[in-house]
Image (cartoon, rainbow, N blue to C red):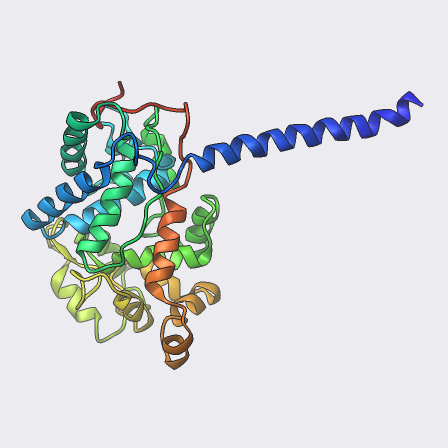
Amino acid sequence: MLAKMAVPVQSHLILIILLYCCMVLGISQAQLQVGFYGNTCPDAESIVTSVVRAASLFNPNTAAVLLRLHYHDCFIQGCDGSILIDQSGAERHAFESEGVGGFEVIERAKAQLEEVCPGVVSCADIVALAARDAIVLANGPGYQVPTGRRDGLVSSVSMADSLPDVHDSIQQLKTKFFFKGLSEKDLVVLTAAHTIGTAACFFMIHRLYNFFPGGGSDPAINPDFLPELKSQCPQNVDVNVRLPIDPGSDQTFDNNILQNIRNGFAVLASDARLYEDEGTRSVVDSYFGVSAQIFGPVFERDFVNSMVRMGQIGVLTGFEGEIRRVCAAFN
């Protein structure tokens, strides 16, 4: 009799444990909400917006830089501000993080927030809000950012391996997104963030001149586009020379980059890979044609949804982590 009773009791205990875990996760997720600082720091979002706007007037590349900063923060270790830590061995100094910028904009916003609401607004939330404001300044869609993130206590170069790389195959890209809880559609629309900004020739040399053993160019590059790319990034060029990632629309947020990918005008190899896979290719194509114009999907709406999902990767909430006084250093 006791043996027969053991099974349902054990199952009952497992169910209780699972329910408890779900409750804890649910509470943590619920703490990430739109208007989180409404009572504790009502001007938080407007302060970040004003700082980002001022930075954009000084440097037109600010929008792309801040968007990339948010992406790197979330993908390496979760959206916890760990990319901002400036110390030896931190992820900010990983090879994969070379060229990431915007740190001074985040620190400027943090300094102003500390004057008004000391110890309240996390650096991780500032990064997420700054990315949203940057998109708007590039004529992209506005959206509400759920806030309530707390800042992480760890930042390690070794964690940067999880970042998607320009040389990754489409399967590698899909796998890296999958492990972050993101779909093929998220992969396509978040990659389309390359609609603004530039890339260094460093990322192009292999694709243009050494794609095959013994040399040669990536056959995915449209033959009409190849001479233009080679003229901007000749073999003996300074690899730090930069070129627009979305030719013809690099200062405006739109879906033009997806059209470029369809036509073989992708600048980055990882962007071009989106059109090699049946799943991601169908997502790219879904934004074009008569049916797309009439019935959708709507690119800007999908991009916003993907940004919000990305912004929830590995967040710390409640009593986890800390609220840094300075974004570049742990308290």
